[in-house]
Length: 113
Length: 113
Image (cartoon, rainbow over all chains, first blue to last red):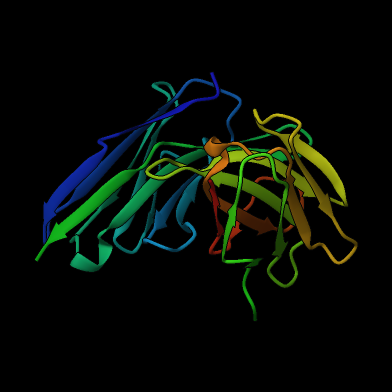
């Protein structure tokens, strides 16, 4: 019930294309859904986040789509660039007197030049 | 403005030993969370400290313990090390105990032989 399932495990996209990563969760008590980008040898960096009362959020080339009834959310990267090649993690946070964040297993994205 | 810093960068220990990892939060942050990231996996939540108390804990045994100091810095201690404890240990800081953006440090790579 605390899991966050992420797919695909890896993704290859042409430069200029759209990268789409999907996540699903079970626990309806999750109240904050961030996406992180991680480069090798670095810690994760927050890309964009959404709360469940919003169905879509866009920041630059990054968009989160959120479907509360289906308990699914996705990250769209428009006009994908080689510099976007990294591992992407979706996550879900729950607040019960302190917050706990559960991460998905990650998607390795490679953008071909 | 210094971000989240962690020390040491790398560490090699043998089974049964004990280890202490350190984290200094981003300036202005008072909450520290610790994560374990095995190779090729998403970060796993260990625990969160706020106001020098453990506020939330993930599914980790009591061999994993922590501490937060009055200046908000934090330590992660692992006793009786197992081979399976080999991982990247990440510290993340945030402000307050609510659902807000976390900033991650670069991590400490622990190898247990």
